[in-house]
Image (cartoon, rainbow, N blue to C red; front, top):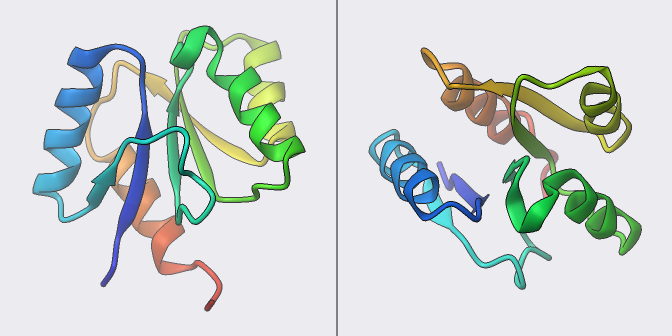
Amino acid sequence: MDRPVTLLASDPALRSALGFLLTLEGFDIRGDADRVTGSVCLVVDQGFRGDGLAWLAGLRAAGNASPAIVLATHPDRAVRASAAALGARLIEKPLTGDELTNALTEILTHRPAA
């Protein structure tokens, strides 16, 4: 199965660790924020470019409806509501277990045919 994921995190250590983990799980990791137009799924860290949710909102406003997962540390109600309003699944950091890989597998398995 083609499993492309665009990973968007400003922290190089987080990007590297998640990229390594997801590659081991069989995902095709991409990381170019300027080329997300055809992305199958986005994984956006809350801190991406200062405010990952605002960045995702801008992407949505530009017409990009790619499925998205937002990674957030101790998200409050406002963060949860913003993620939901953007149609993004929220996963809390620190990541434990297989929640991220399971969510990606579910999204990529159930995506509409092109």
